[in-house]
Amino acid sequence: MAAEEIVSGVYGIAMVYVNAFLIAGEDGLALVDSGLPKRKDTILAVVAGIARQPADLKHILITHHHVDHVGSLADLKEASDARSYVHPADSPIVRGDEPQPGPNPSSLLGKLAGPLLARLSSEPPAAAVDVEVEDGEELPIADGIKVVHTPGHTPGHLAFFLPAKGVLFVGDAAANVFRLGMPFGMYTADREQAKESIRKLAGLEFDVACFGHGRVLKGEANLSFRRLAEKLAR
Ligand SMILES: [Zn+2]
Ligand SMILES: [Zn+2]
Image (cartoon, rainbow, N blue to C red; front, side, top):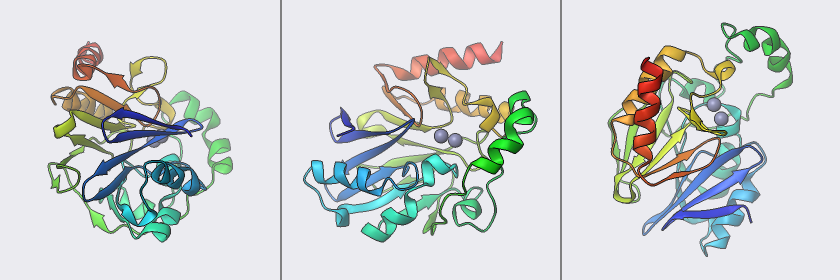
């Protein structure tokens, strides 16, 4: 099984090249992102692996509208009655009311490969958004989760901070594939905003950072974000 316990009660679920995370609280389960399309069974196998039922899944927190993060949202909602949480700037795309914007044409690779990729990449299955959440909101989920609006990668990108465990779910506001860095240029809508969002995250007090792409950073992870923010400011 592709699940790893990162800190007590927080599990990483690796799906090909993207990660989702499961938080086990006394009152139920919360999932951060839903992975690629057709991964419902992968995620529910992790739920079963910690002796919980699909009905225990109460909340699905979505970092942003990209297909590798919302792909299995509709299927999981059908299997579980979980409520979905999305920022209002990304929710029309998650609902399928607006098309995926595709690669950023202002990046060189996006200009060259964008039209081809836009044709190849499938639209994610549309899913209902139950709760629109904004910056600074505190959700009464798993000892309290703080919503951090981190626009740039997408306009409605969210990070989720679990202060009780010192864990930050970064989404694609940054990635840790080779090393900690900016999210992928071609798929980032606004680079300057994305840098500002990394500065914002660097101001939080977290010990562990969980990424949509790449390895978990453990132990004073916020210091790595501060170094990255300084580097980007130069
Ligand atoms: Zn993304
Ligand atoms: Zn992603």
